[in-house]
Length: 184
Image (cartoon, rainbow, N blue to C red; front, side):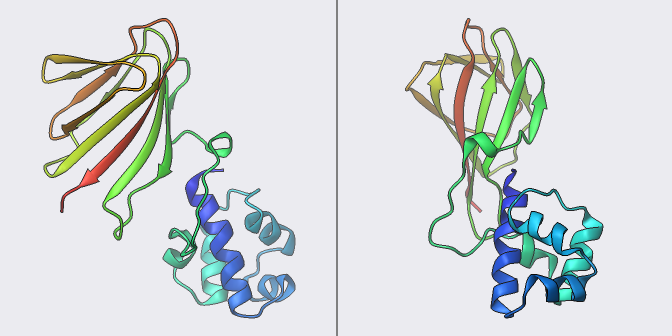
C-alpha cells in the first residue's frame, strides 16, 4: 500500500466514526458499495478519483480530508507494503515514506539501485537540502561533474539546486535513505 492509500484508509474510517455512521449508511450516502468501502478502509483497494469524488460528495468533506496525513500520535510505515513511487525495473526503485506536505518541511525516501545502474535526479530548487544515509552498498554521487563516495553507514548532505546522479558502481544492491529539507 502506498502512503496515499494508507492515508485514505485511516481517514475514511475516522470520518465515518466521527459522523457516527455505519458502513451501510456511508454506502447509501455515497453510492459506493459497502464492499468497496470496506476494502478502502482496510487498505486493500486503490480507489479511483471517481470513487473518491462520490465519497467526498456523499460525506460532505474535502478531498484533502481523505488524503492528508492522519492526525494520529503514531504513523507507522511498513516497507514491505510500500509500492515504488518511481521505478525502472532492473535499475532502481524509489519508495516514499513521508511525502511533501504543507505543514512539514521535510520528505523521506528510500532508494534502491541495482549494481551497475544509476538514478538521475533533476534539481530540486533553491532552498532545498538533501541528506543521505547509506545502509547497504556504496553510493557514488555525481554533482556538477564532481563525484563523492558514500560507504555503508556513512552520510552526506548537499544543496540540491543542480542535477545530480546516484550511481551504484559496486556488486551488491545499493540502499540508502534520503531526507529532503526545505528552508522556506
